[in-house]
Each structure stands twice: as C-alpha cells, then as structure tokens.
Image 1: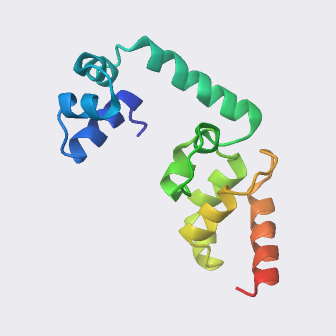
Image 2: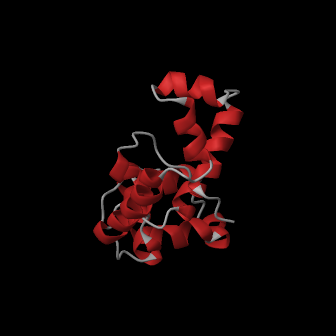
Image 3: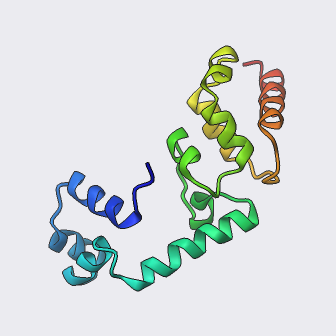
Length: 138
C-alpha cells in the first residue's frame, strides 16, 4: 500500500509525540503550514514531490540520493521508491533468491549506495554482489 506523503508526515509527527504547533516551532514555520502539509493542501509539496520523483527516475538515482539522505536506505524504502533502480528493487523483493544466496538487508542497502546505471538487472546486482564478496572475502 502506497501511503501519501502528507499522511506519512502526520504519522511521523505523531510517532515523535509532537503536536502540529510543536513541530512547526522546531522547523520554523507556522502551525497552519504544518496543518496544510498534513492535509495535502500545501501546493508546494503537491508539486515538488512528484517532480523530484520524476527527476530521480529520469536520472536513475534514488529519491533518497537526490534529496541528499546520508543514511543507508532500508530494504522497504528501496522497494517502495520508484527512483530506486528496478533491478535492485527486483532483488530486494525476491525473498527466495535472497535466502538461497544469503543476501542480507545490509547487502541490499550497500548495493543501493553504489551509483550505477539504472538499467542494471537483478542478475547484474547479483553478479556485483558475488564480485564484492570475492574481493572482500565475505
């Protein structure tokens, strides 16, 4: 299920135990701005997120890379991000193959940090992982 970004923002705020006013104060905006974002009424958010997703897809980088996330994405984020390379998403979804080859979530996250052509297939990522394991001895 694909949860809209405004709902994810509201959920993140609630999980953090913050009111809209508290979040607004922390990020330096009015409470009304947070309310508009969470209700999907902020046209800036409605316009920029789809544009960033399109740019990520067109350039073959993940949404996280494009916006400068420094942390390694988790497997769920890789699977859900249409900007993640399709071959990597396929590998992340293939639980039977991952189990048979002992491909961990950490392996998937590591592969996601390598800037490759977005047309690399699932098999290409497997070959890359095998090469990395051969070189590193892991």
